[in-house]
Length: 191
Image 1 (tube, one colour):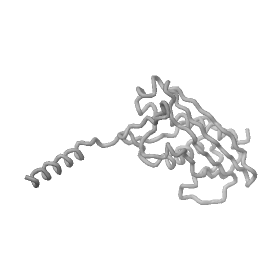
Image 2 (tube, one colour):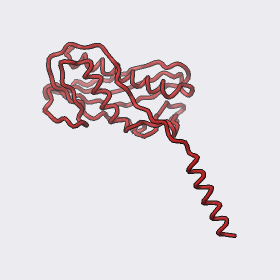
Image 3 (cartoon, one colour):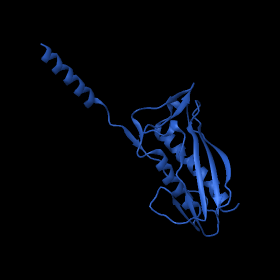
Image 4 (spheres, helix red, strand yellow):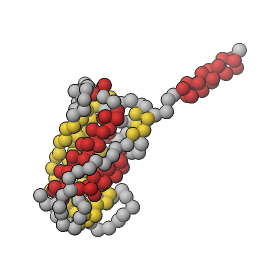
């Protein structure tokens, strides 16, 4: 009788494991932007720093009353910090065609003319569905003291945060990253 109960319990556990759906994987994408005239230069984007609550496989959709909104089935296709490195580098390459832009996390290693550091402190939606990206950016030209500033970018998403499709949320993050690259490109070009 005991063996029979153990067998049934094992079958129920296995059935539960097989019934769990496969997570949906998402990625950020670079967005086109205005080309900024600059002198030829070499720019290294240091690893993007992330607030701890964002550094997870699940996509953080928002915070409501101090509680994170996430869904275990909506996940990033790669670690978010590395993905942001890749996308922000691509965004900057598009905007600064006279510059050689590379990520510290990539395979290229050279002495850059300028180092860029980005720390993402917030990247989620308000309860009304507005995505907010808050970043500190430090740009260190030719070994000089870094010019640091805080950048707050807001991207509207249709509907309340809980009702917004995850694809619209991810697209809004991609748009916010592109706007961040727009601002950084102007600074890098000396404008």
